[in-house]
Length: 270
Ligand code: ADP
Ligand code: MG
Image (cartoon, rainbow, N blue to C red; front, side, top):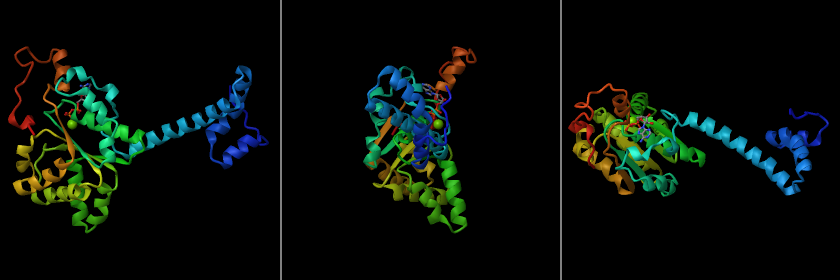
């Protein structure tokens, strides 16, 4: 039933002034339901306010999911833990309470390609959005490209704030491509600026021993790792690729190739 919008209706007018559109929209129809079902006054009021809060939350989640720049939208409910036995489900669900974000701690997810690192990162970011924690997601390639441009244009400090302001910054794909000296230094600036101030969640396909090569400088890699790892949880996923599993099931690999050997670049041993 479409609710009536009578301009003389004082509730509609008051809700408009108070910016409570959902209450204004539903007040009349819910009043009829309340009368028919003999709700208490408090139940009626709570029902209306509940609808207003739910609508606002939906709108907030939608707009902030866009602003957080997530590569895709998946939660832990979409994650099949049975396929990833090296991942402790209870630990991941505990991490999803985001107490580590309250403490400005870090989360580092390591593992070969396709094992769900980005999925876990995105799931944490979505939890943060539900909890109204400011969050931003970026790949390390995009991060350093953006900061490099800002550096060249003499607006580095202003641009750095984009990556220090959110309470949770998710950085995906550390290690897929090596960084040059300037890029590695720009990344260090982000890590150093966030250290003990705001959480970093990061994924990498490279074990820590390989980070010297990723950052082109073992001393800088150590300085980065030192700050990242100091207050952190490390998840090391050692399973098979979910993407390849789907291909295997479609019969695109023979049995001999069912488990392609992992090259050293694909393993991650912290
Ligand atoms: P990685 O970042 O480790 O390379 P992704 O997180 O991008 O891998 O995972 C690849 C794809 O497989 C994504 O679509 C992801 O949602 C899916 N996926 C990976 N692991 C699982 C899992 N255990 N359960 C459900 N989907 C998964
Ligand atoms: Mg990934």
